[in-house]
Length: 316
Image (cartoon, rainbow, N blue to C red; front, side, top):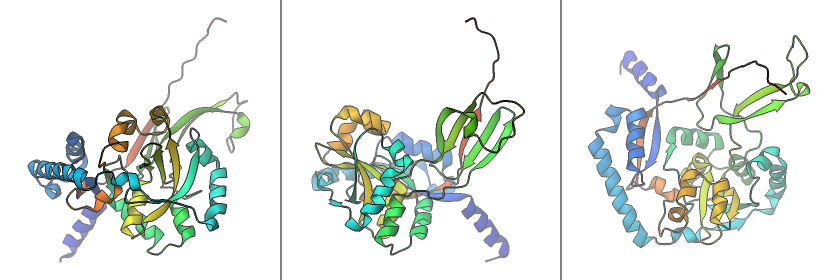
């Protein structure tokens, strides 16, 4: 291979990644829009072939409804090893844990990964490979706990630039990057700022990452576990041959509680995930009849923040 060809391949590899998709899961339009927006056309072939594959997978799910009916009801849960209880206590005392799980009681248990119900139908295989390399092939229980339920873990780099005096751009390669909240800070909460006058207050717009704990929602009626957060970590574990992992579990006793903690797709149609004979499961990501790898362009999560100042008098 010529040097120029090697360099062109290196540049192509750096500008693309692989996304693992569960075919056959509605809506089909979501898959097509994804490929149209970020897919690499020459690598993914024509649209008709992709739709044919999706249709075949959809038919296969109907067959699975007969062959694996109620399989999600029998997901295995076992208590956390006593040697890890100290780490669990430290985790629960962390403020991020309290902010994340502030609506319903929680438990930390070892859960079977294969039978976790999933509501997310694609993951970045490139990121899964990175996570596998970070964890290693034979993690001990402590390393596994920290991988699934990290505290103080290093997050992806964030680039910040100001477009003008009132508009800023934040970018990260992590899909977990997000806007947190707006809040007012007292003067003593701001460090290393040289003010030219007394500070009355500081308005903060907070951006960052989620707590990133592997967690699931348990339906009290069906006893199913729906994976809520940690899809890439769960996929990395299964590809390493790890079948059970420590997981934070929130139990829902009434469907109204789903509005507080679940993703909108689950809250809108809870019966599909908690009552359907054969919902999509984590193990489906490695079934060649319903899973496929799609080369896509490498994207960066971008959050633009702008503000407006208006100064005027109001009558008391």
